[in-house]
Amino acid sequence: MVDPQLRIGGLISMILLYLLAAYVAVGIAVAVAFVTVGVAQVQPMPVTVGARILLLPGAFVLWPLVAVAPGSPPRALAGSGLGGRTRIRVGARSATAACSGRTAGHRGATAMSVGFRAVQWNRDKLVYDGLLLAALALYVTVFLIVVPRLEPPKDVLGEIDLRIRAFGSATFLMLTAILAIGPLTRLDRRFLPLLYNRRHFGVLIFCVALTHVWFMIDWYLVQHALPNLGTELTTWADYGKFIGFPFKVLGITALLILFVMAATSHDFWLSFLTPAVWKALHMGLYVAYGLVVMHVSLGAMQFNHTPFIPLMLMGGLATVSVLHVLAARRERVIDQGTAVGSDGWLLVGAPQSIPDKGARIVAVPGGERIAVFRDGTRIGALTNLCAHQNGPIGEGRIIDGCVTCPWHGFQYRLEDGCAPAPFTEKLATYRVRLRGGAVEVDPRPLPPGTAAAIDC
Ligand code: HEM
Ligand code: FES
Image (cartoon, rainbow, N blue to C red; front, side):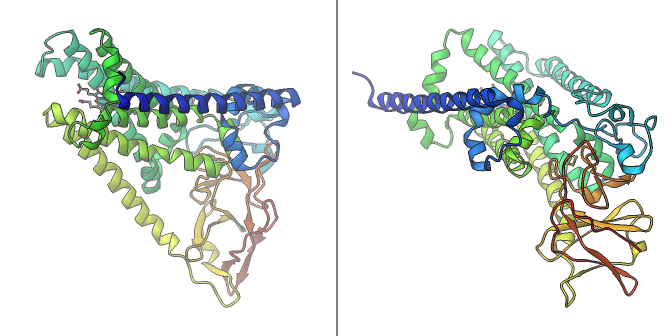
């Protein structure tokens, strides 16, 4: 006689499995249809965001083809600013000549001067990844040398347990670090280089989490007890408990979130899902972080009474929370907005109050942020959201005549918000005027790419 709980669990899993198989099959069929139509046509297709999300499985099969297809190159990203003179160093992504009339030979111009060539790797990316890997290797090595001296493992299971803990805690610390980067760059521009290759950081976090899980599976395998894991996860009565809750489920959910984020980290996904949806999807990192805190609180912390675990959890949570609150306080000042005049225009201030080659960010209360830039005597206003990953354009600089996003170096002309050729992104612009010696901006956006800059 089969346990009715097991029968119901099995039935649910079977239905879910069939649904998943059907979903993937439809996705693959669509992908095949797309490929037959022509891969280069896929990206510009006017498919709604909802449909794109539905087509995700097919796109997973398809994207490596599209990403290398001629005519739809993956977006090359600029230099990271690691060691750069201005902290924002423009590389392959800059179109120097188009912005300032300068020619090749200038820094960063070579990669662009003979036309666009997708750059997957560059020196700064390699340095970034190298430093990440070195820090990870150092942490795991120190952990595996120091902790056994404090708590010597009794047997092979104890040794595997150490590896589980080394990679688990490394994942948690890396998650804390990646969540701290955003607010840190808001508080101090010197942290901007950390932002540049955040996606590789994210993918590495997923790989480290996977290693943690692999050692956990190994722990069961050496005892020939892998089915016990299945039993643990399907003992439904335990889900009603606080102490004794199957904490591994929380880890599995966090791992799935990290997987989706790592799998959609390529720029192809950015254009496939649109920056707004991609960004919303990647906010899942906060959910994953919360799940991991619960995974450790209900798991390791209950049976391992070392003070380091609560210290790590509380320290991590406090760091992430405090940095976000501080950054939000700074942002709130802008979001409180500036009162509009009787004709609906916003007062920005004297032209000299806008830093040369920089911007002042203004907004109507609760409205969209507008970046008002000054390049000598030229003044222009653009939306504050970069077309790449919605980075804060107004925190960037004018480099080689182009407004340059501080995050990855996408560039736009001050005149009309258009990215210089061969790029095609366009930002919404805003009308500006000079009245009584002060710059004013009309908060109603103009269609992206409309010329609106003035001379003051
Ligand atoms: C994003 C995914 C995950 C993260 C960030 C994570 C993180 C952690 C951390 C920080 C610890 C405590 C380490 C310590 O004691 O110092 C831990 C413990 C543990 N995790 Fe995970 N975990 C994840 C996923 C999983 C999954 C999917 C499983 C199993 C299916 C799992 C199983 C365990 C086990 C069994 C322990 C207890 C180890 C011990 O102290 O003996 N974890 N995890
Ligand atoms: S360049 Fe990436 S967000 Fe602007």
